[in-house]
Length: 41
Image (cartoon, rainbow, N blue to C red; front, side):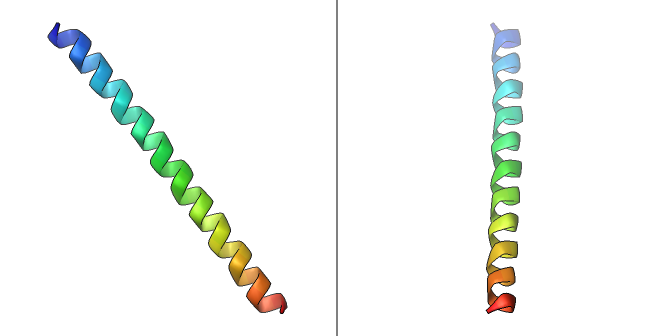
């Protein structure tokens, strides 16, 4: 039982990590685009 819980928690943590990284990359790209627009205009 504890083993299954551990596996689930590990998978959940990994999943959250992936979502977090994707969010950071998305925000970074968004900021870059905004800066580019501002500089170009």
